Length: 294
Image: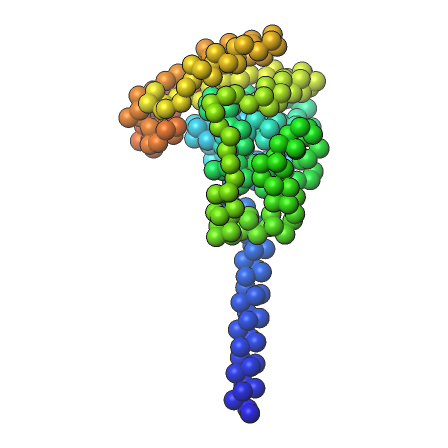
């Protein structure tokens, strides 16, 4: 009888320890987003709320972040480095910009550095759930997302999976659960430029105008060997009837620079060695950034 009681107590203790340990690990992960995929966005959300005296801010994709990583912020006294990942989409960058300008009305210049494939990212299922849905599709950020976008998000990812806090929590902290969920998401990628890109770029322009800041759209460096139809993208965006957007894209097109594929470790990112040798040279081609580097 004593052995049975002892085993029961021991088993109960083991279960309690496991449950408590799992709970603490989840809590640790929840307050330490650097342990999660998409940590760049959580870092950016913290940064936009912090007081600073920068007169410019840089938003962008992971190539922009590779060129101007947060750990190099000390070199630039004028531009706040807030680049994240293309999976944040234009919508996510609009949200970051809204929060940033609300807290930093002194901003005079907003630079958005992103490759065409990033501008055309229509919430692809490979990473946008982790980089956009989980960190940004929630309060208080839903107020910045229009109704059409909300409908598109909930239709694609499923309303319960983007709104239910328990399910979001599980998917955020469990790769085992996240993988089969994302495999069921259908990406309607036909090479077209999503309408939401035009809508949110226009919103970014309007927002900057409201704060008296200049909005600049430039391309991150491009891999000439990357299989993406850049010409088709440019032809499409230049057909917009919005004169201000056309002017924005004209400057964007002029900023494009292609590098040999041997300079890259994958389709979009420079190799570590190439970047160490040529970073200053690359940045010199972006006067918006280079002229203020100390």
